[in-house]
Length: 91
Ligand code: SF4
Image (cartoon, rainbow, N blue to C red; front, side, top):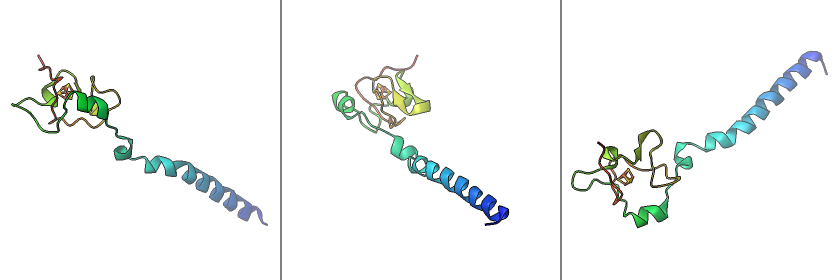
């Protein structure tokens, strides 16, 4: 085997190895990382639509950057247009 072949083979293995490491990360898109806290949603009667003009985007508990809520640990799918009984109007 020539030095050129060894080099090319080495490069191929490096790229292939990096691709194998990256594949699972690619599969974990934003959608698959999202989670819902079903028990809290049920307890606080969460709904995906506003109620009487009140919605998550206008609530002190809403965390827009993470699509979360301080009352829903681990939940990353709180809609800005959602609502629940934990609503506290922003001041
Ligand atoms: S407490 Fe309820 S209304 Fe307020 S952000 Fe959280 S889920 Fe939305």
